[in-house]
Length: 242
Image (cartoon, rainbow, N blue to C red; front, side, top):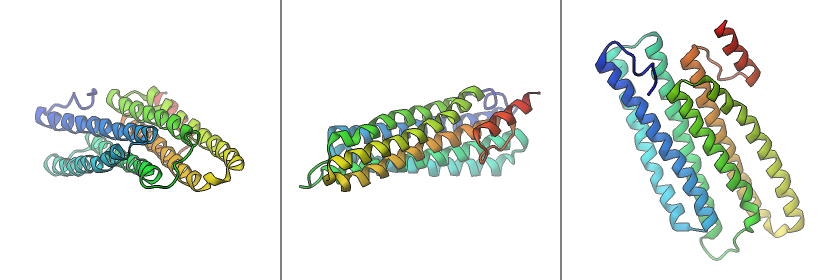
């Protein structure tokens, strides 16, 4: 809960905003759990756990629909303006990105099924190490991005935006390592393609975390920085503080 959602003069409206705020936290917890469990299913070669992740994505979808319904109801009932409307717009955008993170977790779980269901030879675990490392990193980014929203913390939001550059670098480094591995064992080409798709999905999760952090800048400063690079975002924030 932050000072925006906790400081409205109309107590019933304040309650509605707080409820939406908590819904964001709930969806974030589910999405991050899905990513962790999808990667764990890969590590454990656990097809049943992967299938559970896929089925559980319906919970996030249901919460996404519920959030949309509550946002529409709140807009119709309260006709918010200025800061209140900005916060509701921010929540709607954050929920959309969190729902897409759940979609990426589902795709990661499908890798487990593709690799370990049936009689085809499974991949060498060395191929999966970058997936495992990168998943933990981007999941932390998502948690920090939503915490930045929770606490209206611009410094934390900027840190997440900066870390997206690390994700891009890690993705390129992982591709180089995979290429070297394939040169040593050409039989793994098929698995490598799937791993690259998984890495791309994790890169997108990092991008969603960056999006959420940019929404925090919009919420706190009223500056739309969605399509600006890090230097431009930092400049916008600095200018608003003068």
